[in-house]
Image 1 (cartoon, rainbow, N blue to C red):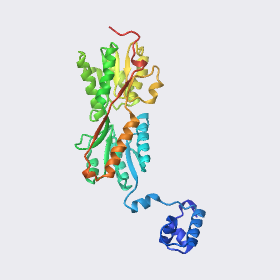
Image 2 (image 1 turned 180 degrees about the vertical axis):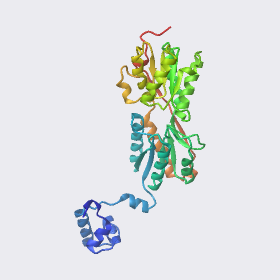
Image 3 (image 1 turned 90 degrees about the vertical axis):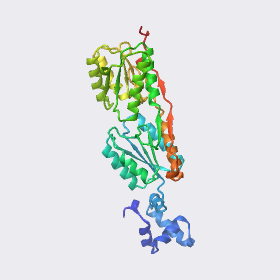
Image 4 (image 1 turned 45 degrees about the vertical axis):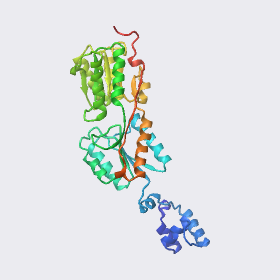
Length: 344
């Protein structure tokens, strides 16, 4: 027998007792003689019986499990958000079931089905890059299942969400580059159907306008913000605008992809081209020079999102007033954007 799979039914068969008697003996409840309790516990130990807490919770109508869907855990951002979620959930006595959409709307829908089948008590979501139709989340809301979005959120009314003030963070980054004397600032942006990318692009345009600098569409390149696409974006921007003197990218991966392209073209960082990214990934301290970036307060975002979700779980979802929490960013200035002498 596979001892790791011993069940209550097997214990009952071996001891010639009913499953309900075995269950009461193991839980210490009901009128069971001490002799029977000892026999049951001894056999359970011998067979390495492990109680199925999830099944027991489901029989009571609860799973004590929260579901999370993230686009990926390859980089530092979502891993740190998950750390905050796990910490908050564990403190409240909940388990966490994590799914990755791998930036696929189709996979995201399958993740959702998996979590619903597992009867999670609430779901936390950050949208995939390719998610445009959010009907599958509307279906969840109609079930009155607690649902909270974080970072990448849909354009839906009355949803609970935790976001960073992406606009403010991007504005500060571009304004910093302007303050260093940069005048032809390029932008590597992400898909504009995503709130975070749209807000960062809008801040880029507004910061230029506020400081009297013209907007040039040839200085803007949209992509999926991966390392290879950041490299390709930089090649295109340099070809179209050899006089560019700074780059603000909507995430750190894209600007990291831009760095070797600039070096291959003989451009020094930051003397010839200043760089700033967004996210404050751990690798930004490993590049040469270290990258200026915007910190997204990842763990705080995770803790805040799970707190909102647990508030909804504790109440009736249809009676819960949706909340939107906006965290404030922090511009982290490093060598990639600091000029030895400000340009005139």
